[in-house]
Image (cartoon, rainbow, N blue to C red; front, top):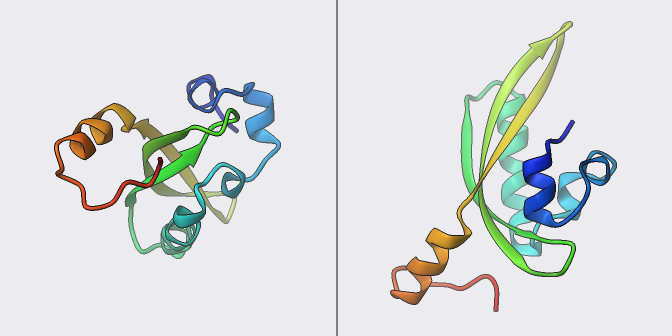
Length: 105
């Protein structure tokens, strides 16, 4: 399931989000970090919060915070992900020199 807010952030319809894996939207440098956090959460190692770079349908970068929570449903562990757009804050931090690396050009 996906909601309209994430679709608007990425520039796609909600139905397209539901049909593609998260990895399709991740910046290449974020894929391993995201997968590790998802795996840890699924194993019951607690809530995970990570900052990731996503790539929109138009090829632009967006910084998000992904919050992961494990849900047990019908004897099966599932992971719920919620996203907060951090792009504006990260842009200000990069401009001020507070961040060591720029992910997006």
